[in-house]
Image 1: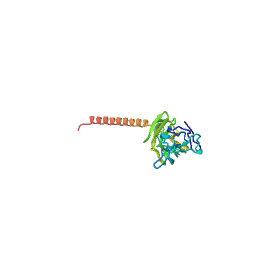
Image 2: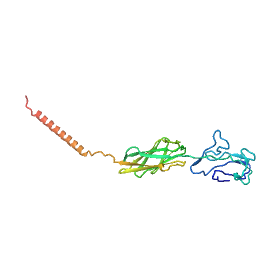
Image 3: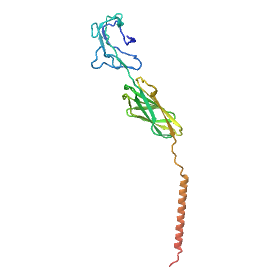
Length: 262
């Protein structure tokens, strides 16, 4: 059987036979999650019977059983004579605000590997305990090399780099840096725009800061000056010196050969 709660969150399953039952609370309002079972000191009247999945443990309905009472007109029943009004579920709207910030870590040089830093923070008042996903779609000027970070698992499919982590992210804190390396195409000029997005299972109360785009000017790769003429000049000078030394040697030998005897 299925039913829907009213505007006050109340529900009723009417005319059930005695037996063992279990209730699953589903289709919660957007952003809300089950709080889990009641804590220490809670009672059947003020606790939450549903666990974090929204399901209760099996319970027994029987005339005169625990927490059973006679029905009243406000209960919404039509035929049931007794009701257990204590089976309920606590729900809570978590306030999570994930922020992604992407920057170029160092110069972006045409024909060389560039490094990009991605930082994920939580500006909300509640922790993010679900899987956090970062997607970095590289522009055509960049070719993926690698991506890594403490606690992160990364993969790439073409230009799309996806990294996930199951680390909890407390309010007003950041995850370890995520580093993406990519080769800049030779001949690239102007600037490179590289963006990233962040998401998680919980409703994010501020969505514009889930996207970050980093712009970096492209630096032309340095080139060494041509040394060909200098080499020829050195070789030519060496040849002249060798020739000059040869002439001096020949002249010296001739002087010794024709020197008069004393």
